[in-house]
Image (cartoon, one colour):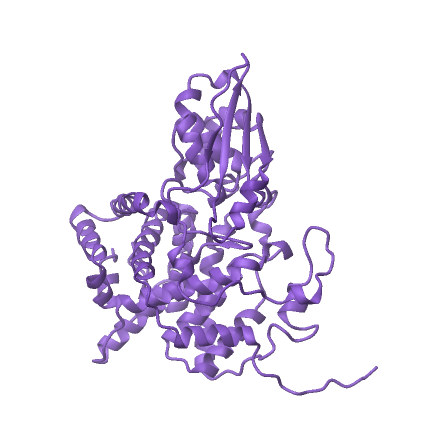
Length: 493
């Protein structure tokens, strides 16, 4: 056995080069992607504004040192904060994700690609202000939309066939990687600097999923993506200072990401075959993910439960006057929902409740709606009927739902609910395969998205400001041509 390592520095891993070449060279020609990115921008900012109503969220916001003044600092929408881009990315990412109401991508891995807006908007606003002050052309909102499309694509394509959750890692690793790629390019990096930044994103310690699952589910899941976007901005800055990269960040034997963190299944701790430790790419990078993104239009709830909530609202009139007569409730769902959000026992906090399939089904069955306030401690304590119904629920997997969930031509997120009463009667078995935020229901969903955005704007701004923001967002060409700092001006308190 050799006692000497062969110190031959490798080329950058092919996977890193694939991401870098996409970000530096791809030209987005899909009108659908550009338009959907505009809708995504509206929805994401609206979710962030709504989160500002919750003190548990706002306590995290603002400069680390009170009174800090940052020249050309990035603004946090809905606030008066002007921060360095690293902390601004943290804050924007935090408010966007706090209520679990922004967009979603579901595949072998899950996640919320609009989380990347934390890094994108913070860097773009800072750069746009700086360039304008120097007499240079500012960045425009087209630059922001382009970065959003690319970040969605990087995160989403990596998620199609690569399950990070099965090895215990949280999906925010993909937020960090995607944000690192697009903001490093936005800051003017060359290919070597971009590769360096990406390598450091993979070498970084990665978040465990502990805080998303019973019995440890908690509010870290609401700021984890903000943390990831801020780290991305920091790594981009490090790379722009010509810090050397780590070419074998993924593939280095024993020390690389694959061998250290991508080797075991968390089900039985068996070693994966070596071929399965490398990322699989179902498709080339393009604009597929943005075109197919899922919007949460009706419920601030973990996406695997969206169709269950929709079914529950429909069944509400048949159940509301017979709650004491309920014998059992059968929820038929897909494997991913069972693995992530099916739980029994005491729910300790709002983050625990919005990741509980049974809770998210019980509330709309009882009240006919599900809002962010329904997860709060006071509401839960005042309504013991919720836990009574939870105790009567059975969760069953439907193999067809599981297959269609993973089918790239369907990507359904199906749930069905049926309520049985003590007298032997029952409601219909109500099945919903595609939520209103799905691409297959886009025409139906766009007016709901716009109304959701309008509603969230009114929680923070006077009516005249709301109308100005809505007007700026409705016209694709006008929005794309708007300097970033002028657009963000509209959201400053």
